[in-house]
Image 1: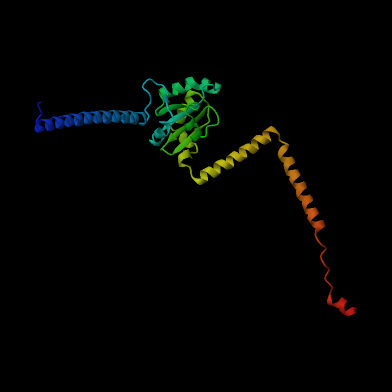
Image 2 (image 1 turned 90 degrees about the vertical axis):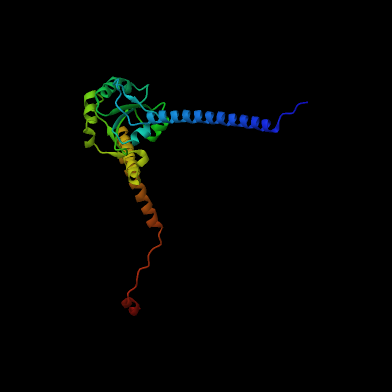
Length: 234
């Protein structure tokens, strides 16, 4: 019976181990390279927006919206819903704006990108905001045609009142928003039924008067002070 030399056996084991090491190292290098490629692709996806070469509006998602705004470069964004009639009507003007605008023009499908829609508190469609400096946004409420929107993108937004983006809001920003929402609701109530508010004030006045009368009538009578002269006369 032949036995392998211990030296040869050890060398064979070492060769197998070394081969396994190089194989695993190559595999790890392959995985690392693939991960780097994915990170590079993600960096490209979240890079500063550039106007599309084909003149179409950029499509932003939950993964790219905030990163795009945080870059600080101006970007005009439309939040829309595919079923919205007003959104459909202005779609050609928005694409025409993207072809001529000096800044990036983008759009967000709020029915798909729910996280972004919630973050931005989108309550109606279409909603148009121009973001600049990474932390400010300007609401556009003008005509939804190309020329007025192009004027807004060309610097007209600077004459509007900026707001902090939701993820940079201060306490005063939130308080002001709640106050505005309250008065908007009061205005809606007044527009729907103008007599409700006066009747509510009248009812409050009547209830207050009734409470005062009840409290006054139930109070014990105050003693009448007797003067010293009357006491001496007795």
